[in-house]
Length: 438
Ligand code: NAD
Image (cartoon, rainbow, N blue to C red; front, top):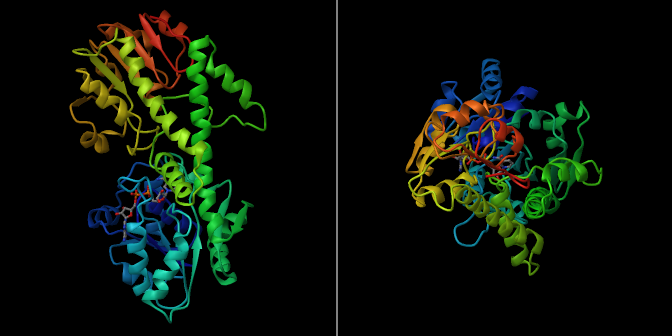
């Protein structure tokens, strides 16, 4: 199969590289010339474990290439994937479909012979039908198919998720489109991964429903954690106790500072907007969005309380700013709410993150970037763990505490235990949904 991938970001690049590894011939296209130049030099513009090696292997094999020329790349493809961004539209929470429709328009003029136009981007209900209309309007005589193929990969584990998916969802309108999609994913089916074939609308809805459900699960345990703190329960024990129930499951039950990232915040907002537009408010999702905002604000209060009510003039070391470990993605990370509040409160903030600096520098003005956690806490008044990078999971707490002016630790990922912090010499320790001290 010959595949063109329009949009070479986190999803487009990983999908393109993995499809080429299946044996397909793939051209990844991006309108950002700097990105294409980097890729053609063999450099990966994002941080994703294993991606650089897999990309090099498939470029070497002659199955994978990069181009800024959409027309040339799309012309002789069997399938063209749209994997451009669908960020939140300013003002109303709706998904901004400008990039998707612009790509569809460009693709329409480039297609030559039967092609399936596949949307991988997360798009609201009805978008695939609109894409079909756009292409049909531009080229009334053209024979083509459309397919909705939402992506479920997680940044930081993207290759494994793509190669070993829980399921592949494909929304189609015709057998011809279904056959092309089956051929593309055939290498996976040989290993028996389930394919869920649906109509276009159901595939679009599956993606939003999945993300809203996961965001709800996280927010639920975060709210339970807040109550645990009030009543003296331990949310880690509670998570274990409920997660062993097969109907609940143990995943996404880790209490933390609130969800962030490139998907949950924007997709929950988009689903809420879809509900409003159809006269059926998504009350659970709307509540999740506001509780999650509150969670992030609670984190600011936690740090303030730990610093005797004010951070003014105090030095705070922040460990981790990306929205989760193993990615450099800073989109909607909780750090973007928490760190500016501390800077605004007069704190001198030092930040250490294994991959976040490149993106984070512009987003977090007024902080000092340090490359080592022990250096970052030198003479600090508090340390705050915001992202559970491996680098922060086995810190020498004694060494950390010894270096600080006031040894206080806000462990917002529940990595450590209060008793260990006490033994290491911390005078204050706070976490999520568990009793601390100080
Ligand atoms: P991204 O912002 O990292 O990448 C989008 C890329 O598309 C950019 O490089 C941009 O330059 C390019 N682009 C935009 N318009 C173009 C055009 N007309 N022609 C060529 N290139 C164009 O976005 P992403 O994180 O990869 O997300 C893409 C989509 O996948 C979104 O809808 C997102 O919701 C969805 N998704 C993302 C993830 C994730 O973990 N990031 C997971 C599942 C689904």
